[in-house]
Amino acid sequence: MKYIKISFCLFIISVLCHEAIFARRSGIRNRSDAYPGGYYNGDTLPVKTAYLTFDDGPSEWTEGILDTLKEEKVNATFFICAYWNNKKMKGANSFRRHSNALLRTVREGHVLGNHTAGHRVLTALSPAQIKKEFSLNQYYLDQVLGSETRSMTIIRPPLGKPWNRNRPLNAMIRVGSTVKNIGMVAMWTKKCDSTDSWDWARGEWYRNSARVDNRTESFLRKKERVYNRIASCAEGNGIVILFHDTHLVTKEVLSPVIKELKRKGYVFRTMEDFTLWKYGRGSRELVGLKSSH
Image (cartoon, rainbow, N blue to C red; front, side, top):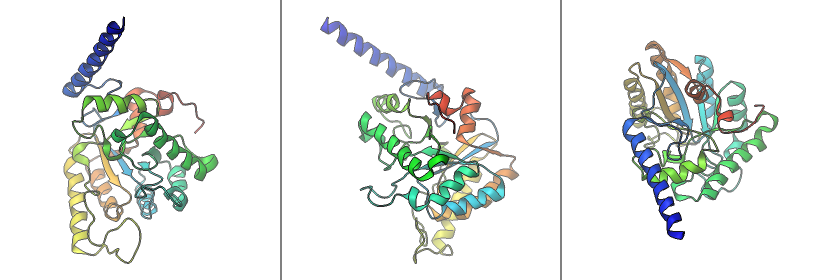
């Protein structure tokens, strides 16, 4: 009997791996442990639709980004992280330090997504640790926003792992089976990674300080690089754009990027809009949460 059980388990694992391989090769990803519901690079998107997404905030630059979005009448998705750049998770988290930015984000119609509490790579964590990262992040948000909080049922794994590159199938299955009941995964269109997080330009930093100067040659070169990257990836196809609101360059380049996409006929939507478009239901319903928010 013992050997029969082992053989059956191996058979199930083999089937799951085969399905994931087929999904990866064919570009068809049904909801499974390897690919929980959501968006992955290469998935179909509505044409001429841009999904602006911002990771790692809130930061000192977030309100400036919100100003631009308000001026341009565009909604976006913010994947927030309570203790980005604070590995020990000590002291006041960024939600408390930038509570006004979070309140504005909610009140102005943007979507808050869960990017974990400590920005820890999911493939290095146990299932219990993965759940804790997301639940802690939600807890910290609830503490700050109180009655105006939101259930963050759109999620993005730090660094995109295990779905950012060709990761081992067992890693995708292990992480996917854990997060599928936490939220809808929202990756980004690979060629629409703005590259804002690839480096720090001279004169750029994640907080305002004496080192910040948006007039340096390095800053201007990076700003041009980010603009050209997004403009070149917008060819009439739907795109999920990856930005980071911890980067000053992003705040500075956002307005010209939006104007260029509008000139090309693009409309702007959130990742919650994408979920409704793809599944006909909201993310909270899909992950089984009942919420009035």
